[in-house]
Length: 185
Image (tube, rainbow, N blue to C red; front, side):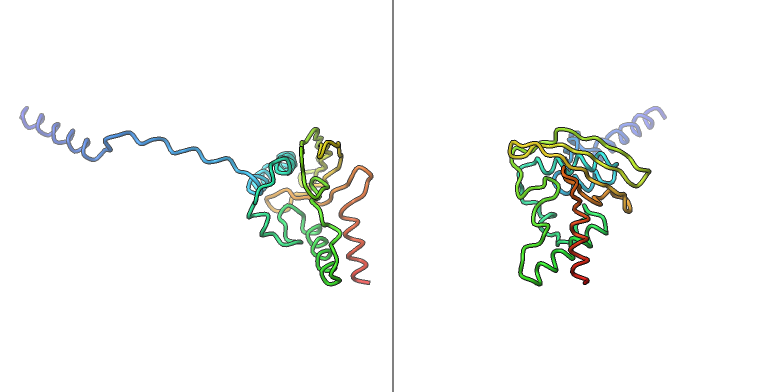
């Protein structure tokens, strides 16, 4: 009986050795951190402040060829609210129909055509309930300090930009609304 137990234990040990890998598997490599639009979309699902910070972190990143950004048609950008997207679309179509440059022919996040030496220097968040917030931002670009306020709204699972108000109080939403009203009239 004792021989049988020893033989059974030996067979089980050999079977276990044959079924298990000879080497320990290396741990799976850590996933690369999200960058570009993917990072903004992920932050937009967290909270308003994370979304605002991600917007400006992307603006500060070296200009990379982000295929997600390149594929976005004017008026269909997931970073903007439905209303602002509709106004951007009208601006683009109206300008295109007249063979002109649209009003929004710059990146409203940095208020510029290109960012150089861009850095977010201050961010103050003011919540307005569960689905709205204002982000007062200060940043430098091309050695100059700029300020603007982002009006943010939560649409579905993500925070989005509803308006951008520059340091002089000029609203992107209102400027685009005037273009849309003129197009209707």
